[in-house]
Image (cartoon, rainbow, N blue to C red):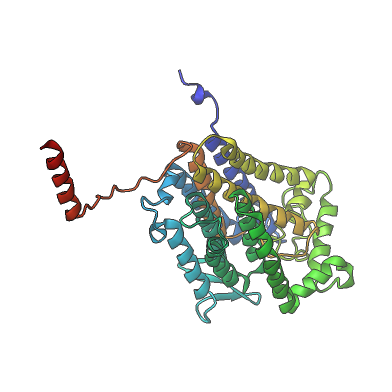
Length: 405
């Protein structure tokens, strides 16, 4: 009898990790959004209800995508325009352009980052970062152009650069995240190092210009060096986040027992939700979250080291790198290890489109774990009929008649 029924398979473990992170996210968003009232009974807040609904939709999308073979992302033809990854990039670009149009994109806190979509708002930058991962995984695996040439390498960067420039206008943090993951995937994709050495310095210079061009971004960078120099301005977020860690200690104050969420800690359900977790769950809660993200990274590593198709391994690497890099940056911001960035904690921070799209991306990782393909899986192409010139047919016939005469 197959012993797989007695043990959890990798895609089952991934499902448990996703459910655990989503459940913890619902719990902490509910706790962080609660205020002081005379009602002693438990009651879901509006934000808690939304997070619960989004988590349910995310789990459903994860399970649905996990059942579909990820090789459907690879076209039967080598044509770039028939690849789903290409069209996903074009859709992401169109969404990023639309969000910049006045009266179309929704502006919050001085940034226009959201598009209205029925009962929820979609953040195009969330779609953009996963479009880049899928596009690079396909492009680096099947190489429709010669990447050994510098011209081919630059052509690869053109759509990614355009999309990143559209994102960086309103969301520098996500653009920086896309750039870091792109660099990692290019390195794993074995592009020539001297190509990267030529391109990376100008890209870093452009990123520095975007930081210096916006006054509030530059103040964030300088405030990181000494938060207490402006305790009521740029350093306020960082100081309140550190106070949350100090208050929580090892064991935490308990669920709902945090003080910083009562108007002291800004963005306590989004960018700084990790500080809320550490205040109420202490060091134990912080380590638990880190273990869950390491579990996602381990699932991606299981794919990377296995003998299977290159597209699946590259896609798994991109998904794992994107999730864990974003989580690392968020944790670093909350602990004041890096300057403040507007990046949420995946699957835990409050949000609709970002949470659902991330669940869909993790569903792709689950599909890779579930559907296994051969090492040299090649996209089947339709056989082309070989056209033979009439003169060649006549010459062959004359040759055969002459040799048999």
